[in-house]
Length: 232
Image 1 (tube, one colour):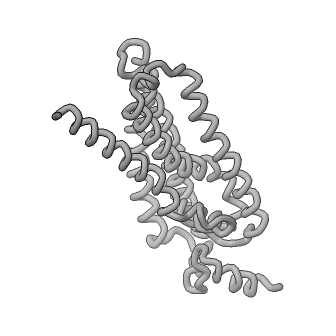
Image 2 (image 1 turned 45 degrees about the vertical axis):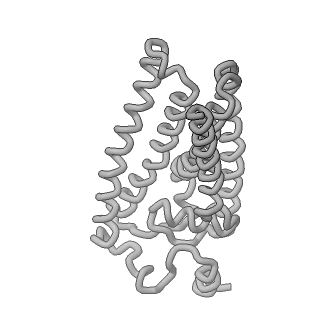
Image 3 (image 1 turned 45 degrees about the horizontal axis):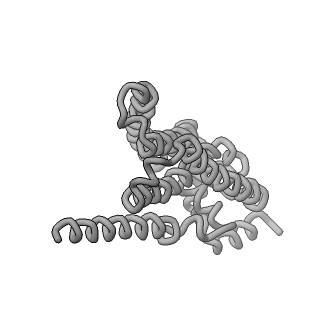
């Protein structure tokens, strides 16, 4: 099968654009179509990374000084900030590709440079569920929550994230073998689109955000019921 016919088949799967006009930007030098968005995204990512670094720094530096930074929620928020830093690092790969004038590069050739940002992306989303579960446990069973072994509790959360990341790495390796030649511009969106071909649930906003929404609804319901009992 020729490269063009392969691209034609792949395009039907819903990955990054394979339009000939779009592909003509490959190796044409620095172009504003790619470079300007890359520069803006990199600047915003830099600010986001600084803010999340401050969360990690404060949590670590003051964890033994202030009680609030010893809490399970504070530690989980620090972990969430760490993964958000990994997530935002993707924008610098996009900037390098756009700034070099390459503009488009084969998926399999660059994906492993983005592996940390892809892991950060999915881990950050998964942390929404972890944090909502943490809050539900604290609201529904406050006495049990206080008595929890903090170290084992945090390790359990980390273990669930590691399991997720093992699966994500497996999907990345599988995708790199199946769609090695597919051109991407370096944005995280392009990588997620291709990875999602192997598992559509990985791109489903409904699937990824339903669990935390349900858990936060239960938190609100429990607080409302508790308020009614206190009023009576």
